[in-house]
Length: 304
Image 1 (spheres, rainbow, N blue to C red):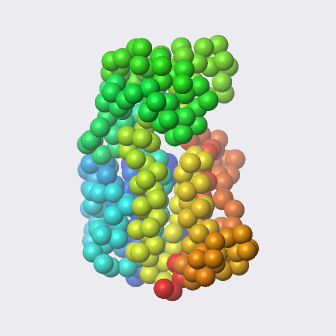
Image 2 (spheres, rainbow, N blue to C red; image 1 turned 60 degrees about the vertical axis):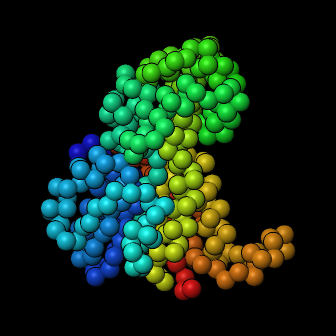
Image 3 (cartoon, one colour; image 1 turned 120 degrees about the vertical axis):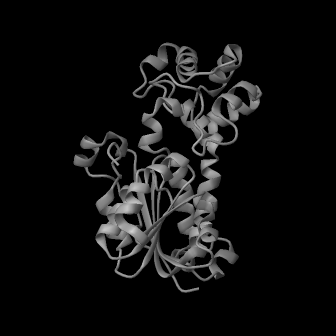
């Protein structure tokens, strides 16, 4: 599992609090870092879920190491309650976004720094980033790049993409976007293509829809006292997690008169463990720069 550093691992374990005899779900198995740590922390069982077939194949060595305590399933974490076949779990951990393995392998097409096919599909199925970039109309491209990439120059970039089509590789797209950004792009703190690549990746994989469905699925799957721990890496993800927990937590019962009556009347389903998101320590960011944007939120499932 070298090459993968699970972000905020100590904080995740402290909030998940694994116990002997219990069951946990690692909904974004990836490199197996969280699953391994959970299994080493307690004599428990873990269901690892990932839609990437490569992640499931890589994890077989970990399955052999922990025997029947680790089960891997290819699927989407939005279906975790279905994959549990009606059983309840004591904890769910979600590490959102692209994994280090996906990002570091040029053939997967996630990185603007290495030549590879313009793919970006986590599951290796469905519409690729190239399919979308080469077929979408200007209005749709602008909307995706502006909303999912939070890119101010979305209109200019969308028009440049359309003028350059067909695009087939990551470096082709990166060059087109960088040129569209112009001199201002060269002065950005991040690569000028960062937000556009993020937008296409999120769109192709329906990451925000998957997250919203996954939070609902976790609520259904968690036993009373079970814990939900989510690590997000950009504001769009963190906003969804924050809003979900606010809408389903004990805070609803104490909400002001400005909150809709149906929300104030609803019994809370979670108790917050983090009233503000936890962020990585400086030492972790220094050793793993990809952790710098991480935001961790957690809550306990209350009795139904």
